[in-house]
Image (tube, rainbow, N blue to C red):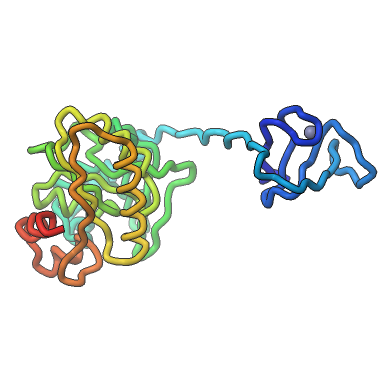
Length: 268
Ligand SMILES: [Zn+2]
């Protein structure tokens, strides 16, 4: 019964905190008995119309501060593994450093990518080993951005990418970019970041992966940005690689340059 939400006002007893089944057809009321079986300390009541039953908001999940763990992993890169990771990902050491990437421990360690809130505090850590990707237990899906300080250069046009590697690839080309852990996560922190940057920011572009999940996720983020009504910030559009590559990293590996990205923005 742990996945039965509480209701704001029970349709049976009129009080708060009774439970409703996930399908909405049944109430477990703690006050009004019926002839039916009881389980625990309540009675089950079928209801005909659950549409008017308001549910309590789900409790907020605690956001953990994972800064010290991220720094611990980051320091492990100092033993030279950073060069290996840079080569595997096709990005510069400078970008790895800016993002605070690391390695968990020893030879069998997993690569680590800190996920931050809008201020750069680490609230989760993405791990990667070969093709496997997962997160440190307790992680919140934040955003990939510089963990120390701020981006370099112009902060007028923000690109929102998918994944840490695409984000670093954009940095290497000289763009201001931030990454989401996937096409469907990190959105709330993206919105908070835009809010934080609105004094300087002029344009926002979403750079999506060239697959259905990427495009759908980009559309949802676009809606959220437009609904947030950031005065004075232009939503430039959604772009993707123009040569059939799946993402920015692959596009650049296939020869795309900064000019190609700028052309995609202009035509997108
Ligand atoms: Zn009740």
